[in-house]
Image (cartoon, rainbow, N blue to C red; front, top):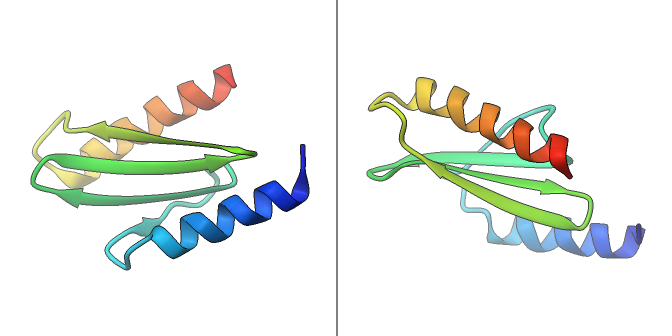
Length: 79
């Protein structure tokens, strides 16, 4: 683990995040989500890695977000 790489990745991710993204606590090092016509876009930063979950399991943002968080936790458990 290289702290300078993590700091750079966090800064880059923050600069790319539009205010339409909402933060999620306790998921990876940082996580943000937004809802659009295609469903949930959940972006997770953990260590030096970043991944995105795109999902529309229901037509409701809250339910789809719960599902996307579940999927992200499964990915994090395998990292």
